[in-house]
Image (cartoon, rainbow, N blue to C red):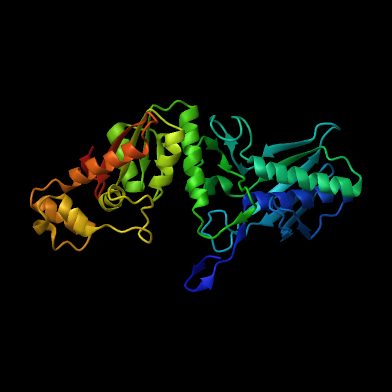
Length: 353
């Protein structure tokens, strides 16, 4: 279990797990006329959590249940959001069908696990909901042909804080999760978003994609190359994982964009640029300049860059060239033409390779 400040971090539940619990409760209410106050579900790895049902609604031909998502100690944008499932009967033989309700997006671009036009309810949550319906139908001797509409009040606004717009998911959030469990401060969700962004770029034939470490470098690279938002990957600190996936899922042209310190760490061999997992080697940076005595007093990478600029040493250009060479080596054989761009904290481009 991960810890923060010496305390264990609580795990949480994915939107897919919450939607499954809500759908099971709603389907039970549709069949029996009474929505339960709690339901248990089975997650893909066998865990059996129990969820409180926070909202109940019964109509003549439908039932609705809602679950408040608890993301544990993870800083998830959907923490405390209401995940709602409305279940309606279908004709026999129709099986289980899915609909995007308010706050849940619709897929508009190829490259995601589901085709355009489908609700953004991922395959594993769909399987979980089908299994929950089958379980209840078997227990109660009822047909399991239903439509499940998943909605998230306020989801369209929350989606503005996610990658959905870039991935071609419009109208709201995605119903996600492969295990049903959110691990606090996990890197997996971010890396999965990077992978999906690359998948969309490949499927739609994007000729030029940028990968940026943050919003400042993203704005600079978009302006420099006139790139639409969906052509830019918000890779954060995960440059190694981004390049690894691009090697097996190549695009014609890639521009890496980031701040001087982060891309110095990459040029020096780091694949994870987080400050807690890699540091700039200031001595090696001084040696790279060819005039180490000029940079011997540098306390930070930013300070080293300032000293180099005052001495008319193109240190940023050297780092950019070294970073591009390393990126080419990591992408060797993929056919990706790679460039690298360094920005300062104000978004000024200080070097390109």
